[in-house]
Amino acid sequence: MPTLIAGIVAVIVLYLALQAFRRADARYLAKVFKLAAGILALAAAAYIGVRGQVFVAAPLGLFGLGLLGWEPAKKLDVLGWFTGRGGQGGGQTSRLRTACLEVEFSRASGQMTGTILAGPFAGRDLDSLALAELTGLRAGFDRDSAALLEAYLDRRFPGWRDHAQADDAARGSRSAARGKMTEDEAYEILGLKAGASMAEISRAHRALMKKLHPDQGGSTYLAARVNEAKDFLVRTHRK
Image: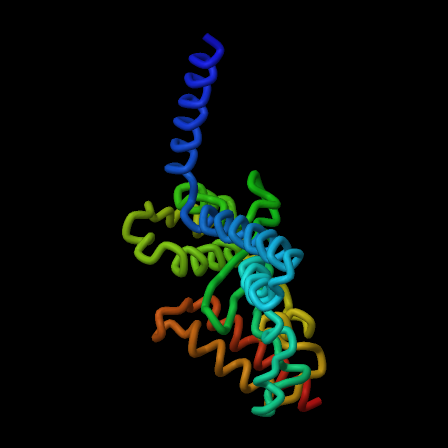
């Protein structure tokens, strides 16, 4: 009898797990699997290393660290030192913040990730929300936040606009939340450190526009913000 009850419970748990798996966002599941694989690889590397097989454990450990997000080549920017691109302008991530969102853009991969700063989903990663939940947020966002969210949706769900219900009345009532750009914000948008040279600013601007220009399948809003950041820093350098 206890075996039968345990079997029934196992079937129920498995069924619920499968249902949760079906409803979960694909990107979120990919992150979970990547994290689990990284931890397992590190555990296996530690076990093999203790047994004395260091030459097998070392690459396996590095592979596990890579799955967990450790990128030594990116941290050191080794290639940059040989091509003259190292130093203050070596960042590869651009960050944009509005009243409701903070989004990061990788110049290398073109991937966008972000966090919701205000509203019912405050503190949640954008990647953890489904399309219906994300599109439902737009009506309550200010103009800049809605535009930034739409740019994220364009990257993650190409073609989402064809199925979304246009809410022109709500969009027209949104207030513009963007204030005057600051120097720190301009550097963050271009993915640079404070004090970057004009050459580094131009290089970062070109790299971003190759990914974000509307003609390249990018976003008008993001391209405008990148141009604004460059213009601001150019004016600052001329003073």
